[in-house]
Length: 200
Image 1 (cartoon, rainbow, N blue to C red):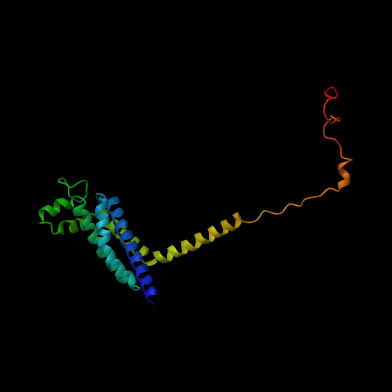
Image 2: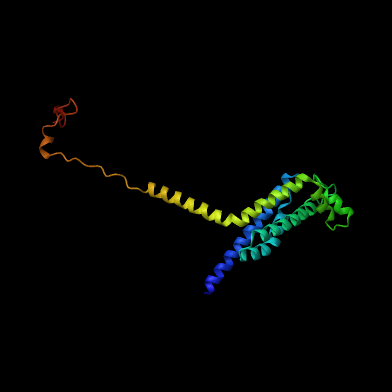
């Protein structure tokens, strides 16, 4: 019983870590495509590690679509805040379209500038809304889709392996009767056999 419980916990942890990584990657991609600076890799890893326990809790039970959507929406806001503040920590604010780092510097670093900038930049808002929709779909239906893809691939591989290992058809060997060898037609014009006459 303990091995089943441990296996279930391990599966939940893997699903939660995968969901956190997918959510972070989708949010970072949407943030960058919407005009923000690409977050550094260390930030993506840190945010994924911080989001993993929450994602594990969410994957523990079957969350409703409403709960998943609300958690993903809040996470998109927090991810935007992290990407906008840490991702543009340079003195000039990088190439970030809405200048969240500059806004944060004047607001005491409380994040209100980055959140306000998200609402004031329609492209950034649309990017994070799209990222939230993709994340909700992936979290809600991703495991089922992966299982369906795996089953389809397994079917294709099995058919390929079976076709590849199919035995070749056996060829029939036709045995000639022994008497036909003497009356066979010679294939060359040389009819004498043995060493030359002078060598004897």
